[in-house]
Length: 448
Ligand code: ATP
Ligand code: MG
Image 1: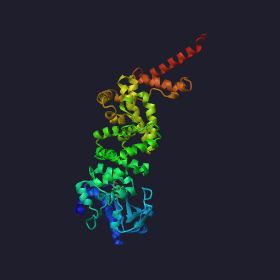
Image 2: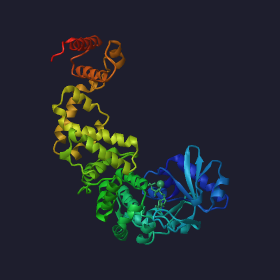
Image 3: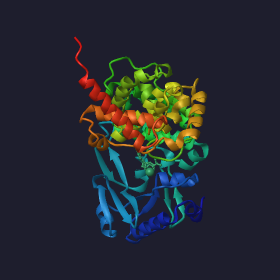
Image 4: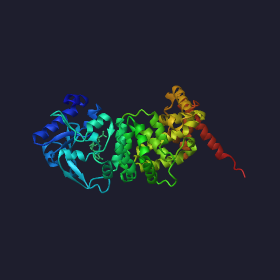
């Protein structure tokens, strides 16, 4: 058995100290209390623990009385948050779930024993308790042996457990990808049988699972499992329906994402723009030979609909759109004017576009990346040069209000980016010339 000190070694010290304090106080008051679920799993594997959940026989109101700072987040489900300094801990009363008539949430919960609480959890590797004060791991579901064999297996019948909550199918595959584990045979077979049920899961939860999958060490394996079980095609159909697409779903909606996964070295957390761009544009049926400036508008519209369907935020949508815009324009980059090239390569979508280039344009990626490198080596300093004049300057020189101001500013910037203008004085001269031309045009006698 792993000892307390081994556990402690891999835990951030303060988190561990606070957890011990909570458990100690619960024990003192005569309650059972353990570290539960993911933290036990990750520690037995020697993986970094980020949050630490506690399961206890104390009721939510008893938890509330024992700690100074608590928040009732799901009192009905027996879940309290206990805050110690800057750390928050989920302290949940042992419960068994009942009902699941909607395939998403239990209709009711009943407070119960520790062992019964384990039975409601999803996978054996997530079903262990750890008591650091007694230095003991409680494992009633063979979680440790599945950890050792690298297996994701449901606690109890996989069909019954997936019928209760369809999201667990996606979780099984996500954990397999995060831990580089296999999904146990019966558990996998149940995913195949029940794949269609994924339509009942809220898009927010699906999206969260994809976020985690995209950061998983074995993301390619996760994707293979999604495809193999049929979950991928169920999801593709649903995404396209919810995006309001009237054309038939693309033939290989995951092809770009698969290509990304083959090259990816995922890490970190949060929004992973590159795989999202590959997934969503794949769903829009975009293929590499369609990329080009003239397709940009149509593609951006489709991408927006997909972002809405997958509940991505406006900021995330904007980031993806910028990446796609640069991807559409990059193939023409090397032959564009110097000003256009600079505009393209200072676009906030540049990094994302470059991260996806070899996926979207495999045949041209090497050439384009070399061009970008050489261009930046030469011009990086000039990309964000301060403009020589602004709109107010133009108006005070006599340029009329209206669209001409914008057009003229752009012309000035083009000239500056192409080294035809260097100073404010030269810029003013260009504006004066423009005003003279305007006046001359106005005075020209009208032809017939
Ligand atoms: P991570 O947070 O690293 O993704 P985790 O195992 O901590 O993994 P959480 O979603 O934080 O996962 O859930 C905590 C625990 O609650 C799980 O370990 C599992 O025991 C239980 N659990 C979570 N979601 C479900 C579910 N949909 N069905 C059954 N049990 C679940
Ligand atoms: Mg967790």
